[in-house]
Amino acid sequence: MDYFPAFLKLKDRPCLLVGGGVVASRKADLLLAAGARLTVVAPEICPALALYVTSGRITHRIGRFTPSDVNGHWLVVNASDDPELGSEVFEAANGARIFCNSVDDKGLCSYVTPAIIDRSPVVVAVSSGGAAPLLARKIRTQIETILPARLGHLATLASAWRDRVKNRIDGLLNRRRFWEQVFDGVVYDDVLAGRFQSATRNIAFLLEAASRSQRKEGEVWLVGAGPGDPGLLTMRALQLMQRADVIVHDRLVADEILALGRRDAEKISVGKVPGCRSTTQEEINELLIRLVRDGKRVCRLKGGDPFIFGRGGEEIEALARADIRYQVVPGITAAAGCAAYAGIPLTHRDMAQSVVLLTAHGKDSVDRLDWPSLARDRQTLALYMAVRRFPDIQSKLVEYGRSPDTPIAIIERGTSDNQRVIHGSLENLTDLAEQHGVIAPALLIVGEVAGLGVGREWFEGQAAAQAPDRPVPVAVF
Image (tube, rainbow, N blue to C red; front, side):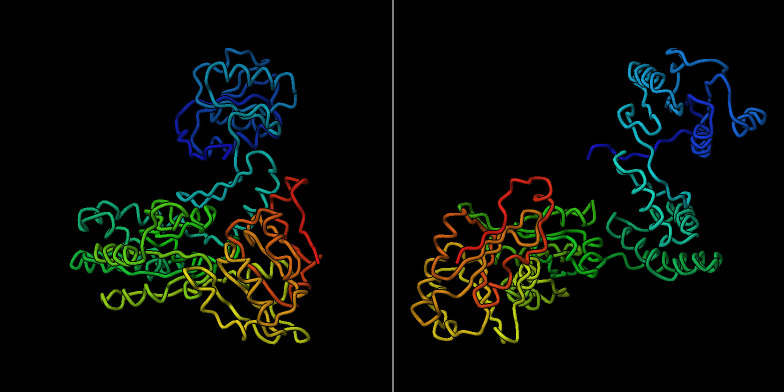
């Protein structure tokens, strides 16, 4: 984050505007809308600014800018088109420790002005950090279309009732639940429809009901976070992450996904780290139950899908025994997501009519697999958590009849910006993994369809765009 986002209270505070043209008048509009006491420094000013001077809304100091002009101001804006003057204004403001913005010159800015969506008192600001102002404006336009025009009225209503709610409902958690009812239910609908008297009656009714019963039940939501790309989260997953009081997550859930959760939610990692003491499944179950009994809404966030090698089944068994409410939100499992991003169809009518998902994780797990069935051709195998067992998998499949020439694909960190795909054949699986230093998480695909992915990997990720020397997908047969 190159710029810290903040909303400044400029009401009745002196601000300085350098420049007298049309651009300066647009900046004056924004500053005056925020209640600033504005002084403009310029030899001449445009008609729009002159009207503000005539009405007494701004002060005009006629003449060229001097460094002492910045003194006593909270904010400085340079809207002149003179680069030399711009540098002079910026240096003077910096020297006085006053934030300065120079129009269309990022190098002379200690703050940037965002694109603004105004639903006062609700204000949304969008910034590209000065890198692409037109992109920020495009995003603003998109947001404008989805934010109701009366959203500000809802915020004003909430402000009027805030103290009464605080006096009637004990505890931050209970008050948060109350306001969620207000903003998600009939009061919200009333305000947006312009039924303000009805909205007032309904918020009073909700407050009376909430004050009588303040103990709220918790709940667990088992949510699939998908294979890595935040864009693969389901809408339901995102909604619940935004409502959760606590997010209990696995180690491989990406930081970018965690950042989409409610900012003030408690985040607890229960991931298993190789070589370190891990949180046992029993401890995770006990944690979920304890949090719910404390009245918390818990998002149990799992990579991929909770019910595909995610031990979600064990967790809902424990929750059911403890009479804890829960929901399950499916996620895109690694086999589907990683294969798609690598351009590999898991099924193909000419090559594979079935897909087998299996894990090679755990003691003796490889030895317990049905190798004669798995070694049949014309089927696709997708192996999770298998990096350490590649030698066993290779030898067992060949031993039970799978052709050494069978195509394979190793998809490392699939769907993430660091995705890497290595193609080859079953007979060189182990050598390829060692040669390229494959590390977990990585998915192994075995079957004729794996060969179709050669040259069809459409997703390169941000890392590839920023690092041209990054290894490209490798195909060895």
